[in-house]
Image 1 (spheres, rainbow, N blue to C red):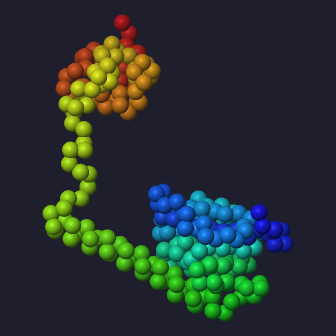
Image 2: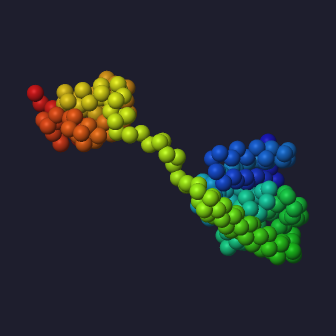
Image 3: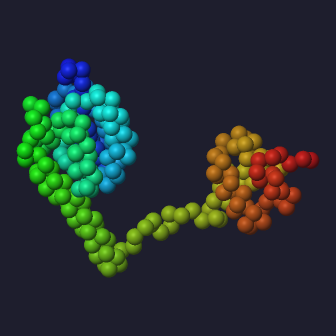
Length: 227
């Protein structure tokens, strides 16, 4: 862990847009930090509403942060207004923001960088524009795909039919227990099935008249049938 500057921390903030992204590309940064914060969230979500963004805000408000390092402006966000608002808030709190990919600092040697505001505004606007271009290319790609006969959404034959579900031995066993008036909790214990599966079996079973009429609404809520 790096030595704290005047008792305050040097913090690295990383962000990726989806849970599928690992953030491995940030591994090339071999600098030492007192704390590394990593959000897996869309850049369109305001910085102060992100889990790790909130954590950083809390640390800054406690006066525990001296420097914030990020790989590029787009890691702070993809909305120009929110990024500029966040940077202004950090400036008001005397935080030196370092953007690694362009080697820019907001307060080098604790002095305000005269070109920081201009460059940060331009770069943030470019990243927001890049996001809009990505959205436009994606929408265009989908439209072309459909025009060529492609189908969007879930592939055909991936939804399980009622018949296929009812033919399962597990479903048959659940229905047998339901017809004995057992509660969902009891059936779950006996069949090692989830509540969701049991409820589905009950719903489809009722649809096809496979559940006894004496299985009352009180039984459905989990109360055991009185013999």
